[in-house]
Length: 497
Image 1: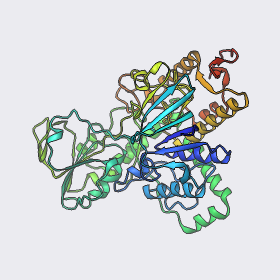
Image 2: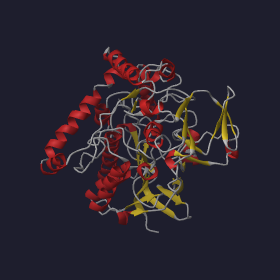
Image 3: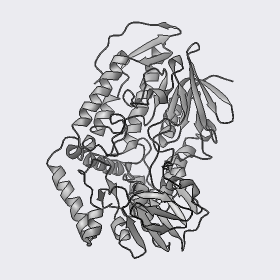
């Protein structure tokens, strides 16, 4: 088979973004491996009722590909899929995408300075560079350690694997977990089910969402005067950047923010017992703040019961809690997030080391993109990419720039292999943890942003613009660069921050 320059394992919109940029630079020697039958990534999988983005539409698009046809200020799932389909067709990317191609393994062949990538039908691809754009929301998590989970005889599925053929009307339904998907789907299905039980382990801080329909006049204005949409996008971006002052730097305005969120809860929920169950015991920001304007009202409907007791056992047609209550059910819906600690594909680098073995105790990358012991490997939305206050698309664009700068530098200087230096790698990750320890994201040991067996490897600790500045160029001094089998030059170790 012809050797490629790039193989992109794509589960997220970032794969499309990088593909667009590669085509624009006439780097056409690449292929995108997509495990699904169409584009969309997580927006292809997540089809549950009420599914929407919690980032404003004008920010949830590439700056180099603005979209004037959003229908809501916070886009629905089908709108985002339409945007991604639009990008694919506009740039004629389909010939570059192999659909239904799930990557099962990637092996670095050091004697050949290339990656061998295997998909589920046994076919192999060989490339100089590998870009893993699987993201962190690609593999649904169902807690299999719950007693009796396999004996339930009703219908059971994860919100990210919604059963489109199943009718919930008139059913007794349990939603387990209060992740963002629960906040979106519960107010919708509550109106059609017979009885709904929401099992909550921990309450969430919730902010009302300022969502509305975008009128046709605005769409036409954006289309004819794109500068207006760019200005609005910039305003939204910088307004969201200011929230870092509260969470990362503990400015006094955090107290005001927490007061306003509690005020919203008190106005929405009059029952003191229910309000107590819905009030978090940690500071605002320790877990990701969620957005909903109808969650609290749905929880107070007559056919919905909030259950805060732990699940003791799942039976054939019910759930038994630790206090002895038994809830008869037809359906269980899991809203329990995703597997984020492991890489979903088997990647092996120098010395046949597995990336999951290396990440067993600490899932780390350099600038969220490159990894020690894994030459010519890039990640999109790698460790610590999570920007809880702004748009991940901004972070992805920054990473695309860094990848392209790396490739251009290597091309201009005739290198064919890079490997991040140990010292630079360690300095960078030590810096991240120092910054995170100053923030509210590290204050709670049970925070969603805190990995229970390692340092915080999910959250970016500061402003999104600072990440853009950090990734604006390829810092070759922090890499060992090779031509064929011989190292070329000795580059000084420098601080990477």
